[in-house]
Every structure is written in structure tokens, then in C-alpha cells.
Image 1 (cartoon, rainbow, N blue to C red):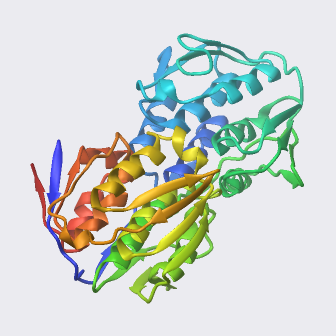
Image 2 (cartoon, rainbow, N blue to C red):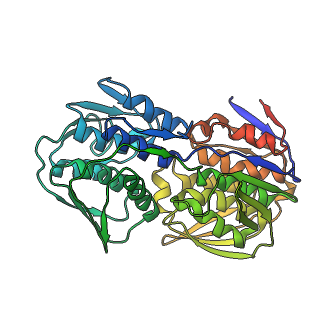
Length: 408
């Protein structure tokens, strides 16, 4: 599909949605399972392309692993290769080859890995030769870098002969993702000590286990948007739990001010409409994947939103700041910056628009964040298949809620 049109529909029929499994949790569980010789029983593995890519590569003996556009897969497999592979080349799409990996490569090199860049310094593709002799048991890592680097190091730490202490320097960003990693590791028998800015993992053995992956809270965020932007709606997200290990659980808290109430039942999370505030202030430092969704909600609902913690968005699947500014502008929204402080200025007369066409920039979250605007006007989404990266059934689920989608 090159593009789709979604017809306006603002009164959603009561709908029950089975969300995809969390690819963040699944990718961690798969790496850990591979480190304990693939003896575990992992249930509810995500159908997301990123996770399926991880599965395929872990089962492959190919000399080169192509991760496509999966950043988590690239970073986790780099560390995994450094403790398991005699030699492995890791590469990806042109965009993946623009996403930095130097901090992780430097850390692994300090541990004793031999890693070389095959094209541009600091970026994939890379050739990894494993650690033969551990050089140090202590690393200093900036806390404000991608948590995927830190998680990659944590997961290999227990099988290092000396274990590992990671000293996080400065402010710690995306902390819930580090917590998630440690929680999954604990499910496979490994414990860690995290005091202050120091995480210590002694040499240990992972224990095979039966493990069930949670539904994806990032995917849930788009249904909060549909409910917030519609005139009538009630959505049930099956098996979505309040006590999740995912940082994007914060979406339920954010939405109490933005127009959605969450009720957790035995079936899952029930989303219903409520009143919203005219202004909001949200820090996305620990949940950056929610920013695009919240920006669209605020822009169309007339909510001025002050945002912080968006800096990491520039090195995602696309420069998400630039992409947001471009696409919000198509219906009158603005996202302005002042010294890492962002202000979302809502659209003034969006109802006068006629079928805006939104670009997705090879970014699954752009497609899914802008789709709920179909509650206000007919829209066109370019390159809709990008959702396969994390939520392959997204468009079918949108149809369940009563929307008419046509391929163009």
C-alpha cells in the first residue's frame, strides 16, 4: 500500500482490541533466552517486524546479520555478538546506518571486544569479534544516552567472567526501560544491585523459564488518542495491566488531564471519555515514544502543552521533532523550541481542512499517531505499511472501531 484514505468517523462503536505484545519486552526476553541456550518457553511473542527480525537472526548462522530498521535489535545483537560470536557483521537500512552506536561500541571495546566500523566511524555497519579476555569489570556510561545501550550491556553482564558495574554519569533518561531490562533479567534468575547511579551485576547463570510477554503500552497509546478525539467512544484493551513493567504505562496518567479515564478490570483496561484541561505540562524523558501521540491529541483538542525530554526524538526512525513540526503544520498545530523546552501550540480552525495528507517518514509512530485525526476529517496516510514495525494489525483494528479505510 502506497497510501490509504480514512473516512471521518467521530462516534466510535464500543470496541474490544487485543493489542500486540510488547516488542521491547520480547526482544529482551529473546536475547536472554539465547544467552541460556534457547531453552525457555516464551509466550505471546510479538508479531512486530522488529521482534520477528530478532527471532530470525538469532536462529541464523549467517556471517552478516541485517537488522533492517530495528534499532533495539541492532544494539542488543551488538552486545550479544561481543560475548557469543567469533566474528559477526551487523548492518541495516540506510537510516539505520545513520543512527549512532559509538557509545556502545566504545563500552564493549573497553571490556575487551574487537569491533571495527566498516563504513562511517561511530555508525553501522560494524564487524564484531567477541571478548576473549575481560579487561575491566567497571564502565562509566552517560546516563542520558539511549537506554538501549545500557540495557544491551546489562543483559550480557552476568555471563562476563568478572560481572560488571555500570556507573551512570549525569542525568538518567528513559529509566523505566532500564528497570524493564532488570525485571526481565530477574525473571530468568539474575539479580542486580542498583544504588544511586551504580548498577552492579555479579557473574551469574541465567535460568531457562516460562515467560509471557505483556501487551504493548506504546500501542495502547493510540487508542487513548482515538477515545480522546472522538465524540463518543469506549475501548477495551484486553489483558492490559495497571502494574506493568513498561514505562509507557504513564500514558494512562497523562490522559487523565487530556480527556480519557482508565478503569482496570479483569478483562483489561477500559477507556472512556472525560473532560480535559486547557493546558498541560509533560516530561517525556522516560517515555519518549508517547510524545508524537500526545502532540497530536493536544494540537486538535486545543490544549497548549509544555513538553520536555524530547531531545532523543531526533535520532529515532526519523528526526521525529522535524517530522512532527511538518505534519502538525498541515492542520495548524505548531511545535516550538526554546532551550530544550517545547511548546505545543494547538490548531485554531482545523475543522476547515479538507483531507490533509500526512507523510510518515519511514516511522511507524508517525502513521499511528496521526491516524486518530480521522475522528475530525477525512485524512490520507502515506506509506501506511510502516506500522508493521511494531503493530502489524493496526489498520484492521482501526476498522473494528468503525472507520472506513480505502487503499489508494
